[in-house]
Length: 130
Image (cartoon, one colour):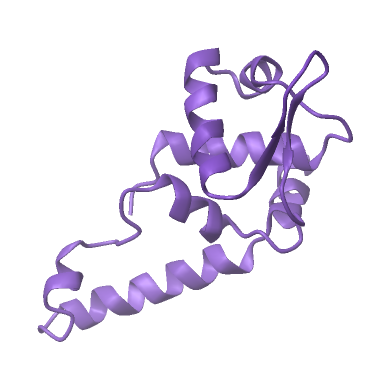
């Protein structure tokens, strides 16, 4: 599975929000993540629509994580941003067909890995030096 850039940006934005005690604006998040404001707004809309963000309107408004970073997983965020989570799309059509059993085993391992990493853990990984 190739991870889409929108997913990468979404995870980076979520890590920024995990580490912030304040609301962060779309402009601030776009600076921190290193993408355009327009692109960041699209990412934030996907995350908000997925139920992962709350937005606060007004002069001091911005975004914050809706829920606990210790409970939201990388897998959850990916489901909101990826078109497909499948390593090999044909496994949906014929899961019991010959080599597709192998692809399913790979898919299950990848899914478990993404489900085991919470935003809190991802933030800790991102902070490590070296």
